[in-house]
Image 1: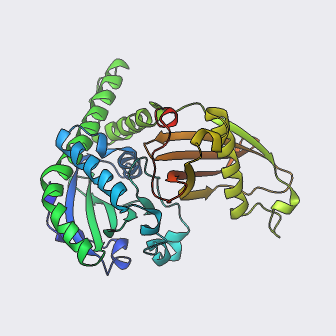
Image 2: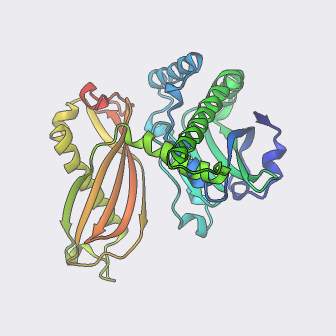
Image 3: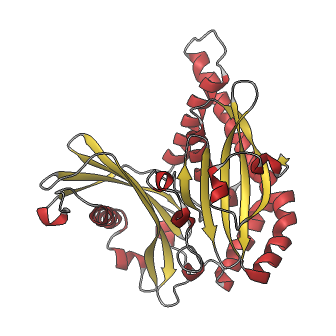
Length: 358
């Protein structure tokens, strides 16, 4: 259900201080209710969805047209995105948000997470038409629980961007967003149904409360979304050398990223063969987004074990998740999204069929 703009502007969201030069396009209420600890689970579920493969045939057709136009006209080329045509909003984040984990990576949509708190999540996107922000907020529902709402904020790219946003507005309002909301509602309802059935099989006489349903149901639903095509982790082991540590004798951020990339390349070799040979001479992979959350220090001579999981593989991108361990202690977790580019033009390209269908 669409909400008035005041449903967003009247609340003390952190996003306001970052988007003063953006306009609020619209606000939507998200389906479902939950408890105070369910917001991050809902965000992960949203990030895992692929609306271009949703239940609405009309919405799927519009997504296909948009991606094809972007490919033909270069709307989504790397030089039109974050850090190229426009600076990322992460540069505007206050210290507390910049130092915190930004939230989950998106499996399919080209959004980059900005920040995640107990009541807000924001992610940004940029192309040749606009710089946009999706904001998810948690709102009390008046009965002790919470609901969520989504706001879309945009900064069109000149007259062309403004005309583009005006042209797609009726399609977004009448077809795309209603289809997305229906699919999210269906996931929510399936989660509720699955949880009720599990509790019944356990012999629980009492009806589950809303918070328990959401907590267990959404967790299970999200697990199924991820695990349906998730292979077993690939394990990469690296001994940390003294020269790879900072003056503090601890492994620093740049080296961690190098280790993660080395682990990804070996994982790729194990799954598909040598990187250049499996992509072919006309394609290259490049990192579109990366984040790392550090949980414990890693020191010289530690044996670092990195478990790599190739998550969702779309036509043009690959989502990768990393868990790093020293002995049995998890010391870091991270995620990256690689996109496939044409080696000559630098434009987005499709992955080889043998990889995209993996």
